[in-house]
Image 1 (tube, helix red, strand yellow):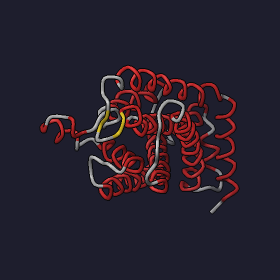
Image 2: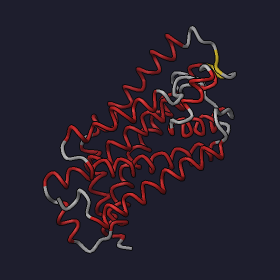
Image 3: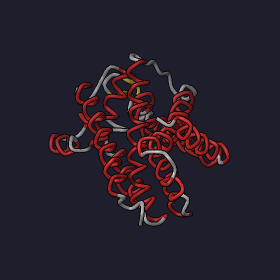
Length: 253
């Protein structure tokens, strides 16, 4: 394993993150704070509790997942797309590094950025609502796995994208709606039976449900199923990345 190459890629991506700290960190935190104000105050004043948890606290896991998923995806996709755009990807491919080392560098940096944002939003939530985490180890585990899995997905999107419009297409049209419809601001049990069944086909439901269980001990689906879903997602993404580098799909074009 070429740790020097991994460290170099990781350090370069993290340096870009801190150079654009306002866009990369401050903006998503401010946006999430607005969600707390709008949903936690306006709607929370009308909905006292959900499954025995105050509505303001209930939406915290969903808001963290919303930010983490979107930021991990966008950071990873832009990180690998930009070298394609300016042509430096060929220098990377000709260097003595394999696909795993390239992936670890870019995905590790994107996951770290998303983790920073998730932790800051978690801390910010204490200024708005009273939160108690019942399973802190499980919370950290779900947060880390979500950061890594969606950074892997973003890495694939960055390789697939042929222009900046395509780079934003999947996050805006697929990931964000799935998160909003995945129980971020409500419990799946609040839906009619037919919509509960349809919602179960949304993979984001399992991630948010497991993460919310770590906070409050309540879940829409079994925790084991949530872990299995995110593990399957990670394996599927890694397999896709291995195939991309093996065949050169969208990389050597």
